[in-house]
Image 1: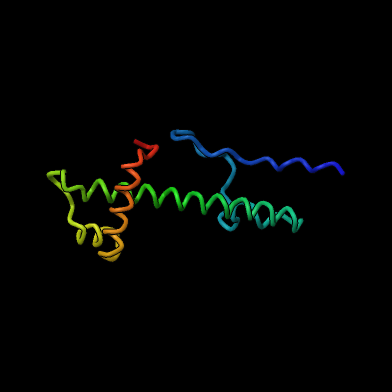
Image 2: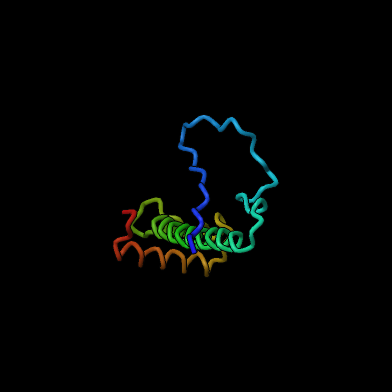
Length: 113
């Protein structure tokens, strides 16, 4: 049985790229509502869910690294953990854990360093 070709995906806009001439459909969610075939809908929505999970995990790692850098006691302008908690809306306990997690990422040589 021949496989169906993958649907074409729109490329992301580059910084400074002029906006697309086509109007943006604010009611559409990544084109999922236009997919009629349930198997294709499941595949595409699963792909998006996996991408969002991966993005959320990576963003959390960046938050942790930022928290570690902001609260680093070697910095003359270090931010106290309670201030970090206020700034982010986290509890003090969570802010401290995020800073600690960020330090472990930095110690391991986080790829963005």
